[in-house]
Length: 201
Length: 256
Image (cartoon, rainbow over all chains, first blue to last red; front, top):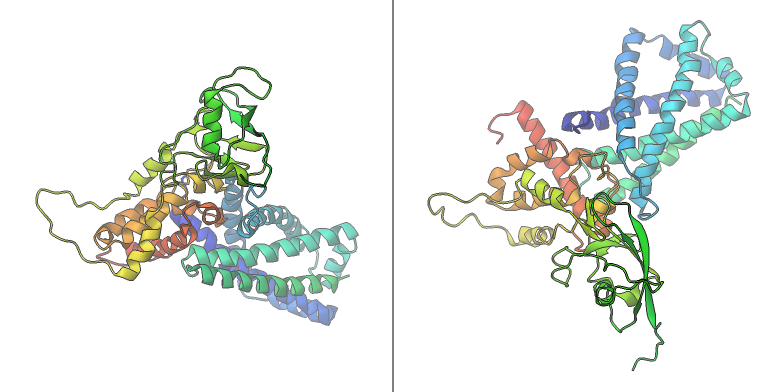
């Protein structure tokens, strides 16, 4: 990993969008069902749980890509020597926030998976009541708001970086318009995520 | 005579270091003001009279310089927090006291003198030249379109000054990333019609250790480049070129 292999960095960038980023969009959309009431959410959640070969899908489409992305990502984050104090440019801030949000997400996701998916595997039914119970603590609400905003930011800014790393956005103009598109993605997904969160409170 | 009143002396705070492994320290200087001074002439004034602000005799701070017109890159240093050339840093336009530091991304030789060897090693690694040496005259090469020559010329302005490496958060002792300047040279030499004959070699070089993967898109390089080189456009263009190259390598044939 120390030799900055081209392939694994490209894979890191790709996995961040497909499948991890796509899963985030699906996940937030399922959550959004909670705005229509507990039954709608429970129905959407049980549909996800009823998918065939679910564990295989989870391992291949979620766990392994997230693990790879997180491990290489933590290494990348700690390789940078951030310098926004002397170079307070927009992109340099985005660069720093991408690393900070990623590091926070490692903690948030570990916690989140522990109290939802692993709790479900240990026998707690995963439904509206479980989330409403988790979110009855104001500290946890703040933790979840931060987690959702970090995830959405990390995805939307990462989408931009993906487009640059894969040579899709090359000209300065396209990169600038790409930034606005990423901002729109951030705003829309943040609305979906936060509104769904408050449907459990 | 100008109506504007100027200070009689200019204060400078210089980060000094006796040798590569010595502990750095700051030393203050006050030099007599003269009109149109730049950082180089202020350093020269200290060298003529190496006395610090406390009036103690000291060793004159060392720095490098050559062209004095911002085309050689030798006098790059960190001036008031920003890496730039000392020759074009005009005292009248700088915040006082003027803080001078070496570019710490590079090994420090002494005071403001740094060793930029890593940049020249990177240029060798990416083969930033066009190999035309041989035993017989190869004749004239293919022509280059004028429109292409115009943007390629901008890339050729790079003077290997190191300012982009100093500003890049991913160029540091923890990483082997070669930095933006040598990457942009790959684009320059691959754009040349004769140089393009070896483009796969250069792309493979930047797909290796310390290559283009080190870029994290902080885009500080393009903001600080004194020559206004579109470094991030070069890197993005090389991202595309390396993706295409890797597909050719994996799926294709005749891919050199």
